[in-house]
View 1: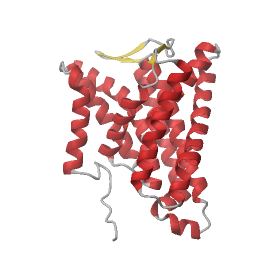
View 2: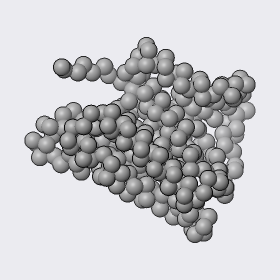
View 3: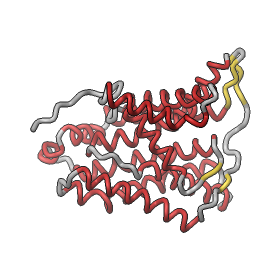
View 4: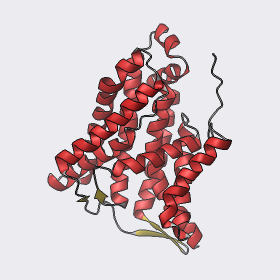
Length: 293
């Protein structure tokens, strides 16, 4: 039963990776950009939650809404200021990648300037009760995290497949030039994608703070990289793939720690990335796409 408990714990942290991986997959699916600044949006969301919840003394639901709103606006502004001109002029992908790294470093240093490099402790955000399933105890934090991530994935899938803006996102992903000829405003579509991805990262930040109540200016770095590994594992550009990859990475971490390998957890995660790139670069649910030359 200890094995099943570790699986459930892995699904808990994996749900957070999955939410962040969704942002990577959505942006890559639209503009083929690996937005390495996306991990730092988690850090931004965590500090906004801290300011509203701890400094401002507001209820948790207000802090959550404030975090989502701020991160959404931040994501749209980052796309507008840092990426849009490069995307519209058809700049090489290496330019976009360097810009993304620059935005990440800027956000980390700005937060360090505003809040110092010392960690901030978060209060207990979720109930500490547990649900007994036979001989397995499921903590309320893990339950809330798993249910939230699944619900958001379903809503996102409905948004992309059933709504008008979702159809615009899929059209832009298939062929941005043809989408423009069909009257789709691709700039708004891309900005909307960044905003949705950043909102999901804000939710991930709140859930992460509930499980690990210490925030620092650099907390989004490794978390973002692991979410990127999850996106690649599942098939970057695929919404179900991002969720599957997040869960698998979370379970792999949990089992590694349970086996006494806490010091090599990160090595296991990035080892998975290397194996995936060697043997199935499109990911578990990704599709191999031939590029015409």
